[in-house]
Amino acid sequence: MRDPRVIEGEVDAVRIEDDRLSGVCLRSGAVVACQALVVAPRFVARAEVLESLGFVVGAGLTEMAVDGHSIGTYVTAEPTGATTVPGVWVAGNVVDPRARVISSAAAGLTAAGAINAALVAEDTRRAVADRRVAQENPRGTDRSGSSPRADQDLATRMRDARGDGL
Image 1 (tube, rainbow, N blue to C red):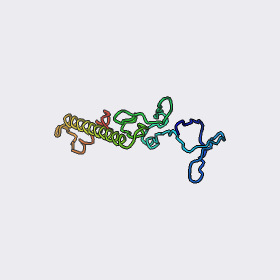
Image 2 (cartoon, helix red, strand yellow; image 1 turned 45 degrees about the horizontal axis):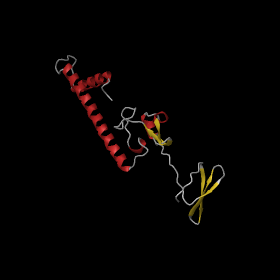
Image 3 (tube, rainbow, N blue to C red; image 1 turned 90 degrees about the vertical axis):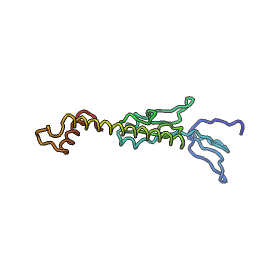
Image 4 (cartoon, rainbow, N blue to C red; image 1 turned 60 degrees about the vertical axis):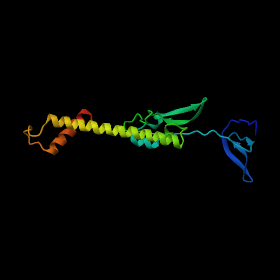
């Protein structure tokens, strides 16, 4: 077929005769005979699982258009996959509706690196906070009978009060 026709409308049903496509029935009631059918899919990010993590799906989805035609929705994220919800990263076709296996795997690797870096940074923040508490309250100078457990409890309370915790 060298001169394809473009017919706008919503397809309601596909007609099959002798196990072959013979036409489509449009919602308008019109029947269009055809031997081949091309449709433009619309990819919608299935991000409902993110709601349980604090992500507002409706407000967090962005429309992607190509040549003025919507091809789907995606979750807005940093290049590392980080979302607006702290501690939540995304990758793959939930971030880019055009993504396939290879690019989705690469995005997953990028997000994994960012997650690892965030965990290392959090561990470092906690270690520094614990060290500062230990320096501020050296063993033997606390007349209240300080113990390792009491020191740890104090470190945790101070870290949480300063917002250094998760």
